Length: 513
Image 1 (cartoon, rainbow, N blue to C red):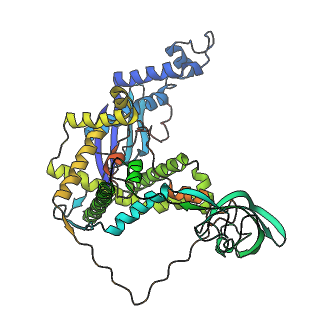
Image 2: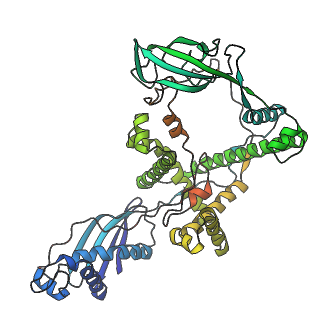
Image 3: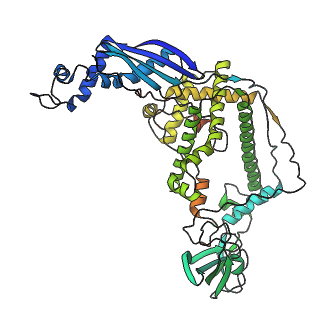
């Protein structure tokens, strides 16, 4: 393979012209013959057994040329862009095959390349950082949660239901005298006052006694997800089977010994304080880092190719789809619930994707300017983290995780550390109280319910919104930057995605005259 030319045709676009001739082309033709000979019938030979020269004689000497081009192009592409010293961020396009004959061919194509950016500033950036404090009320709230978690339900049989009780009920809903789908439940434990059911429902269970059967008149909210019930007045027939209340454990040294590694209340409260402080400091650090990332992105100047943003948006959508699957909900179902299309979802990710791309480019620019490097030991240590996380052998990890990508990610992290080391934290600006409180935006209708319509939100919707990320096995030859650089609630610095070389999408040259 030889590189005939590499010319910049427009911003972030280069046109390359490569040739393959002589023995290299003949080797590609031979590979094409061995790969496809089973497709050809030649009189006197069993299918797939005819010699190469006999197939060429019967079908024409150019019979294997197009297959040879497809066979040779990926290697030509890889060697060509390396020799040209460019970094493609797209697949080849506008490809054209010329000078195709029995001695070789020429291919001309374009690629979008990694943009050259200018970084106005990366040292001395500022970002807000919350001051961490822990009050006695914070400690008490944490302890109250621990007590609540260890609470036991005690049956009530000497009084009527009160707010805070758990009522075990059978219920069935009727609209215009007829039962409606999803409006029936038996043995349902409902915490009164929790707001789990539609407004008015729980309040009307209060005051009733165990064994009572009664009706509740309620009206579904106008923006309720199930259109057939939205704004409709219905009647629920209720039977109160059982009442119970939470009984909190006694908060003393014995409780502390049961729920922790400590022996006394004083020791436990000190540990609670330290844990709250640690969490808040980590959250403050994440917020500070996120602010620095935003400041860094705002200092990027340059034209960013759309293809980079689109690829990053697609990657984020795929990650979201994975998280949905881990929660038992597929992307198609989620889109049905939300009334969105895949295009809508991708469009929602575009702004964040542009931020991610700019951030990565900025950090890579810092690596270049500061001549940052990661040594072999650092790379090996990083790969061993995958060994521990996925219980794999090191040699198996190396088969699916590119060492070059790991090295690049480590240097990017060093760039982020450099930005933080040279940054300044500022106190958060006080929020000004508006003359008039802004009213919250009207809540959108929830997706159609499949559960009992008395519930305010569908479980599927909640799952889709939370969809926490879970540990995934490393994808083949995919850079691990997203795991290592940032958490979900931060601006992430994803690894640059290098497109695989595809065969040129071009019309092949006509048969040789």
